[in-house]
Amino acid sequence: MYRDDMKRAEQLLREFKGEDYTFGEKALEKIGKYSDRVGKSIAIISGRTGHRLGIVDTVTEIMTGKGIKVLDVFDGARPNTPREDVYRLAYQLSRSGCEGVVAIGGGSCLDAAKAALVLSIYGGVIDDYFGTGRVTEKSGGERIPLIAVQTASSSASHLTKYSNITDMVTHQKKLIVDESIVPRGAVFQYDVTRTMPPNFTKDGALDGIAHCWEVWMGATGKDYYQRVSEVAYLGIKLIVNALPEALKDGENLEARYALGLGTDLGGYSIMLGGTNGPHLGSFSLVDVLTHGRACAVLNPYYTVLFSSAIQDQLRRVAEIYVDAGFMRESEKGLTGRRLAEAVAGAMIRFSESIEFPTTLEEAGATREHIERMIRAAKDPQLKMKLQNMPIPMDAEAGDVDRLMKPTLEAAYTGDLSLIPEI
Image (cartoon, rainbow, N blue to C red; front, side, top):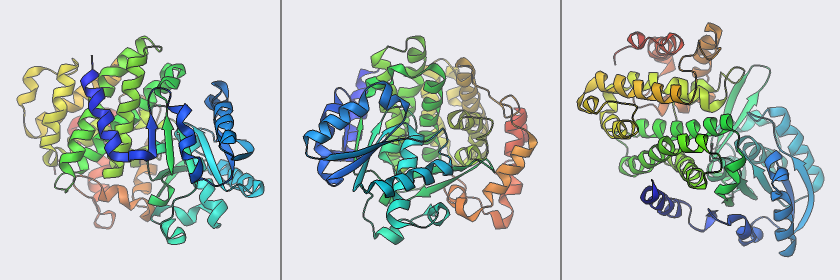
């Protein structure tokens, strides 16, 4: 159904990562090609999937065969990468004396491995590294000695410069953004995701859509617009078409492969540009929503807010939702805010089709969560998300209260009319 799209996605990923990335059929067997990038002794950090599917044993056997000592195997991180897990791993890595790490898991595990390696090598506390380029100030641009083995079609952390860390006391995520934490090698054998349960599959897929759509929205007028238009469009198309098939039959390997490619293109997208409002809001919803669901709830409402700046993106993405049956053919001819509302409606119907909540209230959020999101948006360490918006916001000029707050009220109630005109 999407063979041609998959072939083009493979080409794009090879252009993006070159020899640093091995993906697809039997990819795990080729991890040895990266053995000289992490020193002569390593620790393995693994989530449950790595143990359950025997990936830890496979990696250990291959690396040992390459003359690399595997000193220890440490448990990965809990969902949302709590900062306590990062500190525990940093301590374990320091005690082990390893020269490098192979991390096996989904986004939370890989994000934790990135941050823990930074702390074990450069010291300090995690707050020292939140924001953009703070690791590079210590590393001089050298990448951390990490090989990432992805096991979930979701965050694409194995390909990116991002590490999300959560303070479980305040229920607030913060972000390390730095080229120095991009893994030196990455592996993703897409068929390992066939054991992903339906809810995890949904969460990861919608995270991938959010990566593509938010970066694409924010790319208006940028020199990388044409490239991200192709990458993001193809990523969204693959996910929208493949997710229903994967949910119908978890063993459908073509659908699993397509989801892996689609979410990887989400990773490509966030290396071209940055996410914005929905991701920023999701960081404050960790106590009530998974990341993918939070982004899925918020994206339709920000789509309407930014309508005046994203008309080309709206026309293109409408084609996907029309072909998938979530939008009427006649709506493709709309313009302005009406087109944005039609696309937002299609996004909402897609979420309803996979039994996702479509408003913050339905998702279990409270008005206190809205206040939490507003406070987070004014945090200087998260300023990048405001700057990444198609119409950048300035917290000091009052844009967060004037534009973001009513948009979040709309997301809470489902009333698109509350979203201000820009």
